[in-house]
Length: 247
Image (cartoon, rainbow, N blue to C red; front, side, top):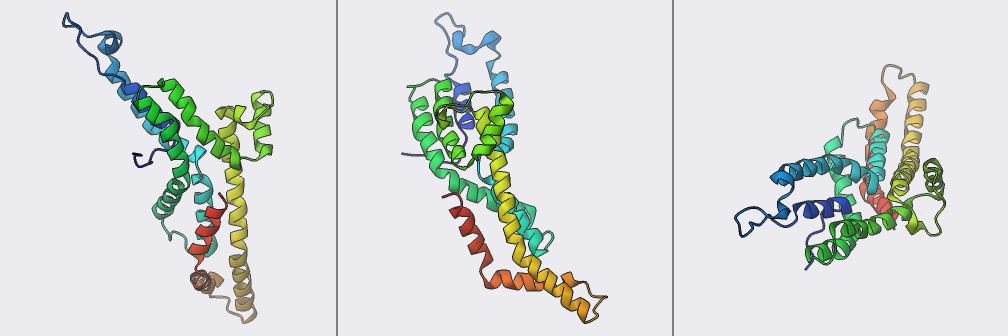
């Protein structure tokens, strides 16, 4: 039975299990066995490593999931509507996280089946679990990483061009994927800005022509943009288009 797939990244999936390992057992003589660690200090080091992984979760989430593209588009939308702080940053980040989990669930299921279950059953080592778990994530990132960005980081890393994309290292795939996601987010945001920019220009030209110099055009254009966005069911259209862009 599959557990709820909430952990998306293979390092975060395999590392806590690998670090925990078997519990230290007492030897017949009353001492701890060889699994107790060097000088009996395994537990403090395990806590340090686990806390380090917790601090890396935001960076890994940003660099290996669609979170970057989603959040960039949402911030462009808020700027285009001219609502300043509505929706709030917490609301936009929460929506981006929910959509990220929705998109990455199939990848999480593959990681669970390929790496976590065999590791829990003791059929593979923790290092093998990390390698097997990183394959679905790499495949996902390669689907959306541009060849131009991959070639750039291959050149910067001074690595030879591989025969198949699967031979690329995560050192190359991760920055190339993140750069591609940022470009895609800015492209969608620029297109999203155009209809609202037209409204701003029309309102500004009308208020100027009738001599309404003391009334800022944004006071009139903002309600019009909100009305247009609500009438066309903008959130449904935007989320649907974003989800299909990862199809």
